[in-house]
Amino acid sequence: MTRPERELDITYWLLDTRSLWPGTKIAEAAAAELQLISPEERDACTRKYHIADARMSLASALLKRLFVSKTLGIPWTQVRYGRKRDPTHGKPCALLPDGSQAPVEFNVSHQNGLVALVGSSSPDAELGVDIVHTNERRAYTYKLIDREGLDGWVDVYEDIFSDEECWDIKYNVDPFPLLDGTEVTAEMLGRHDRVCQRGQPVVATLPSGEKRAFSSDLVIDAKLRKFYVYWCFKEAYIKLDGEALLAKWIKELEFKNVRAPRPGSPARCASYGTWGERVSDSEAWLKRKRLTDVRLEIQSFEEDFMIGVAAKPAERLPEYLTDFKSLDLEADVVGFATPF
Image (cartoon, rainbow, N blue to C red; front, side, top):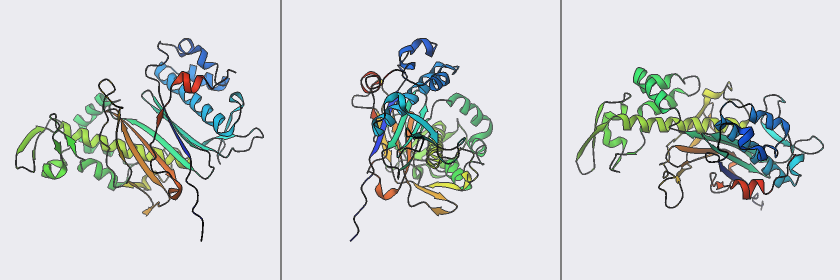
């Protein structure tokens, strides 16, 4: 009788930089914290034009160093990095003092102020994480959709998404709420689920027979949310694999059974956390074959964020892949670090 392999131990950290290091210049706002990262990392942070980008760059450097130092028991200032396979374009990895690749796996993503890290002490783990924010460029996206229609806007990404994925984004809509909270499904919309223009009158027939009229803006927003789920999964898997977003096989990497998780609560009025729904039954396919060794999971955070994780080997993964712990900068990071 073969003994089942042990479940992988995976770390999930989230650091919110939106209220950290106020000011316009990171060198002044985070002078002390910049001394906790290497000169190369420090230079990368201070060269950022926007302080919001510099904050995320600094937080990413701190989280990676914290994870590697804690996991390997290496002193904070002795943490070094390299790349797997390709020394220029390969996936970032940690190095042991002798220069060999360390037996750990980690990946970091940041978007609109949030920084996430997933990591494992097992060299067998392969992990990718991505954060998307559905409202970050909404005004610009609306402008393009008003001009080209949602279908025309999606066609811009035809080199990234397969024909089936593009169709799903354009013409299939996940359940979404009306302004009074009533949930509308695709079945209630009838052929209105194919709408690709904003500002159009739409009617849904509720199970009671009542008809509700509203703007197609709500349908378009729901479809945009699904677009970001596809984008998040695509990025997370490519980061797991270590390829850039321009991987030659990117269009042949497809995701099926994709659904956007219901949003969480806005931070300003949440009474018990801000996480929303977790969706974990989507599938990854490559060149028309299902990748059975890969698991995908995505969870919403607040109203506009979603965090997706791709991981393998599937049979050794924990129940949840988005079990993120919010870190406190001072208590969890600075308190552990030592300056250079």
